[in-house]
Image (cartoon, rainbow, N blue to C red):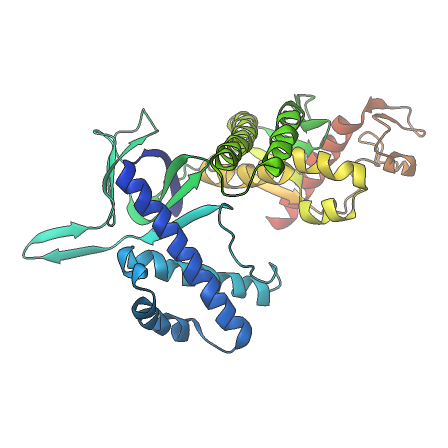
Length: 378
């Protein structure tokens, strides 16, 4: 089976390379916003029509010639994908890009052969820890210390800037050999706010609540930033500190989710969870719960379980999001409507007398429902 896998490295560009990266990010943002404005004026314009305008724009705006031409085209592809999602009702209407928000650009891999010599615009040398990118030439990288080479066909590379740090994410098409397994263990998981994950065998993964740790610092830096003169050196320094704090918060969440998911996927052959729509949950939740749902990173945990199970040849099933797993008794199947109240953490069955933790009861019900669903599918 062929899969697309991304390898993200920290980059250490020199002063000239930093200037070029910043210039390319600015140019791709300019192209994206310019073409989005064109689409707003005339929605019937195709991506091919917009592509033809790039050559005339390079004459009007000569600075566009200084950057990677593939990156400019990729900006148009991103815009096209945005409109496809909008018309398919899987995303909102594309918005204009803002400087300092998700600063990045993507360039595609090109391979040519001339006089028996192969030329590639993107190369990775993990032995010497270097990467060659279009117009950037060699850049020092760090990451994946135990990896000596990347096996697969490079598709593209995304260069991003977070605070004052630079990263490159290389997308590679690899062949994955999936071993056939005879399932010997099954688990149901209930993702939540108080505990990130609760399994049907009673294992609980608590919520570290990293937001609580960083929130005070974030508020202070946001207050400091609002008092600075926009464009001044102090404004820029404070903004970098704020972005760095957000980066640490994001990385802490990713590390925790990765550890939880790895333990679950490695220990069980069949995994069952709810099919959650986190975006709708946030919209419909009460005001005081929205931050807690966002902080719990439910969607990221489910996403990681989904693709890791596939890669390791494990079975993953999802039960209906409207299945009342928290209200049904896992012993006698009696439904307690009072358990709709999320503040009740102990499940007490009025029919059979079962007393059990609310989340463990829900995860057992999810496991049973998932097994029943798997038999129906097979």
